[in-house]
Length: 432
Image (cartoon, rainbow, N blue to C red; front, side):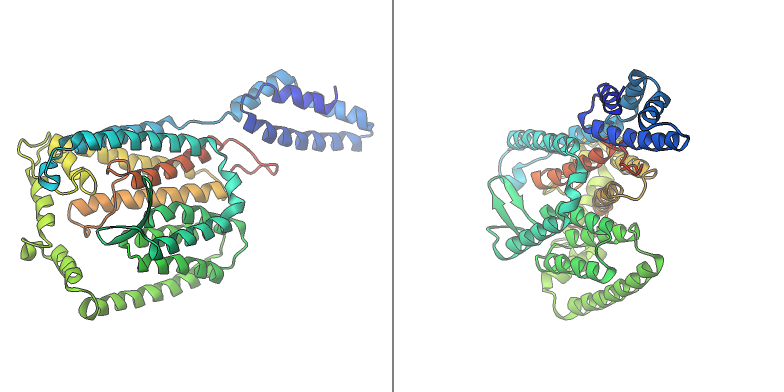
């Protein structure tokens, strides 16, 4: 039997079309190596080929075994946790009192929009999961350029503004600082994988978006961007010496930035900005102004029992930024604990997935995704309990809004795309 026909029989048992090419390439290498060994023993080219095929065994058994090994994988634990959070995200919407903030009960409006947002997010997760993430690696530079273009458009050509933050609205899609993060994530993962750029070039590529983020300004996105790139750099191919040198430079920039912030706090910031900082430190002194919301959140959490409270505090943005507090008010710390555990379990599950992966584009992509997801989660949780300043960081899959939901749907979709293909092998035998 010719080797080509043998390979066709083997791959005919592999149900995943995507895996067939990788299996065929892998088996061709094994056959070529075995054939060469038989030729060195004195067999002719044709005889050596048949010997190599015979060593492979039955095409049927081999095909079924390869189908089992290279079958696309589904992480049902991760998918289940995400679905649990999406279901829980309806609780703050259904239990919030909108009459104070909007003058009427518009629960049905938010529920309908939430259903649409959820469907869009689920479709996004499924679409990205089925797309082979490896195909986007070669477009890292293009993706980076698109991200910069979006930042420039948001900064200099905005057509909407919410709470002072500029954005570019096109229909129901709002392009803002959050929108650019997934693009920069993919771009820098590619940069840290290709070994094309040296450390100082990458530092320049990092500083340019940082400059735009600071001009917008959006502190939450700026911090998240810094954290993600720093984590990727720590897991990159650079030597310890290079990492140490860059770390020293970045630390120096951080100290300089802290000094600039202290100077700005005393001389440049507007009174309302300094008041917000002071209110976080001593909210009681600003009980009627900037500290009011902080005290309301504390009071709402203090009044909630394990299974909720009968008299709930009315909170602005109870379905968005402070959805966790609203959920705890409605169903208590028991429900809140389940949600927090599910949120953190997603992070731990993703870290469990990445622990056995070799250095690759896929591994860095998962690391970047879990970094963004975990940073949002931890900051949002610590924010509502008063340990961090109040900012616009949403709680993943719980806070209302299409943009944050899509951001986290993209992150989970990327993780599932990598996990789905973790059993595939490249020609050199490196798992991706």
